[in-house]
Length: 410
Image 1 (spheres, rainbow, N blue to C red):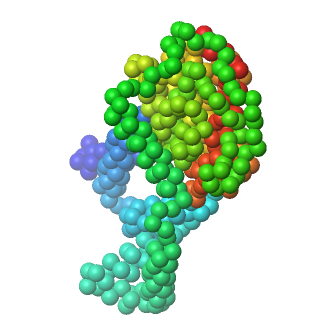
Image 2 (cartoon, rainbow, N blue to C red):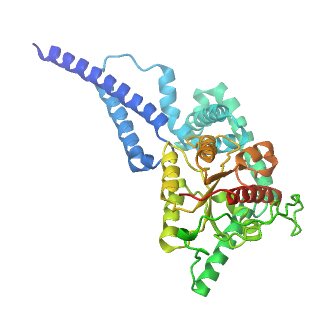
């Protein structure tokens, strides 16, 4: 066998292996995109690293294929075009997607617009701007095209500057989404400082082993007032809760922190931005260990979870809670679907648990806010003002009152 023949066979083998590696790596990346979620623990443990290695394998395989097929004709122009503009698309796509995903409820529409505009901006940058920065004159080569693109680009830049100036001029210092979260954090910090000054930890009124009797509630029920002032009266007035209430929430409940403390006697509230079910489960164990866990446990989590791990966390919470506890789950709600998050499935599971377990009650915030979207802030998830906070607290109060007539965990 001659050297040329051996080289030709070697190139064919290299080409075949390169194509196989590219197909396998690409298929693996697609499968990972379907399997891993942005909020999943496994994504951060090894998902990103594996994705980077697969991408590197595709690049190396493509280079090997190029070297093994020197006599093949040049790539089709469309392939060259996407290769030249791909980096520009990478730079432009994310801010555009953030904007469009908050404007359109349909994720496919937001993605399509993001791709189209990113590709257009990347093309203008690569063929029109970069050559100028390198001292070239692209308008001589693409005279007709750039004669249209340059004025269009200039107009878009001026329009963007004018629009940005208008947004900045009209934007409040703190918007309706940030305000309730900030206020909630302040109330929680104040409670922590007070507890530190008194040098006492929050402890239950009774040991768990002595619980089990019904809770006592006031019979007075009032019509909820939607007035945005201190005259608001909760829909259910609770005089006392012998075993106390522990409230565990995320950034949604932070918007109602002040009213929760006002409406629930002696409540211990702990809400935090971006809190996952896993984090809540760990905090419940800490409360049990230091003796501060109350008899009624309100869990307002699930808006930040997905990836298939959430059910195990919920089941773990229920299993680890001590006997005598009553659990209230507040159903999460996302007004706009978010990739990887499973708020609807989690809300459905909360409702299922309330049907199956006698010590579990549901505060169905998801059902209420779905009928009253005006309760939500601009992100269609968090509480959008005082009326929303009042409705949220009323929902929680009614569930706590219902839980008071049930037996505790055995």
